[in-house]
Amino acid sequence: MLYAKNVYVRFGGLTAVDNVSLHIAPGEIHAIIGPNGAGKSTFFNAVSGINKPAEGTIEFMGENITGLSQYQVAQKGIGRTFQNIKLFPSMTVLENVLCGSHMNVKSSWIQDMFGTRSQKREEKELRQKCLDLLERVELLDKKDYLSSGLPYGEQRKLEIVRAMATSPKLLMLDEPAAGMNPSETEELKEFIKKINSEGLTILLIEHDVKMVMSLADTITVLDHGAKIAEGTAEEVRNDQKVIEAYLGKSYRR
Image (cartoon, rainbow, N blue to C red):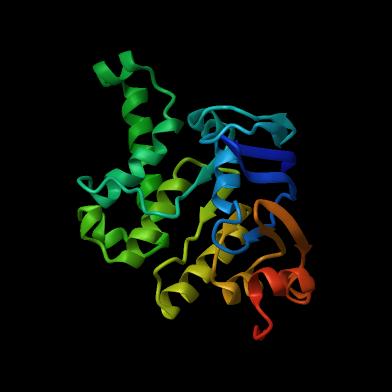
């Protein structure tokens, strides 16, 4: 589904992503881990159109998307969340999700202006889709709350739901469990497994190693911008380079 080949991202004289290649198969959960500053989010940004690679190519569903803008990447079928929550705080929970669904609108501005029958039908269908998504994460009863008033864990959920409202084929999650307590993390893990079982391919960055090891089909490890290991949880946690660079000798399964 996603094939990144020999990707470099540079900022002046700093190489933040150093010759990284990555292959994500349809239907899998693929995790990227590594220490702070390893280049994980920068790689995400290269895929999603925020940073343009200095070298290398990124293909999605067989199409070269290298250097496309963020909205063009989203239109191709890649949705993402961010390490720092980027909700619209003055909008309601439902309005935030509706914003995510906007790119799926087919009616023209003329149809919108005159409120044609087809435009009203499409608006009703998109609204119902967003309500269904909120129900799946148990936020339906808070659809009219301001997003800024939600507890932190629910804001995380809402950001994932907004990304899902774009109807992605690949969902990229940047540290989705950051700041969550163990109960919230477990709930999030089960939700990710559920949407993956329904056919959504997942690429995530996560510092919760226990969560990653129990969730991901494939794990890629970055250090100083370069890939140092890749494989199953069993292979990665027993890799000496990974132990030295990230997990530490005291790591226990």
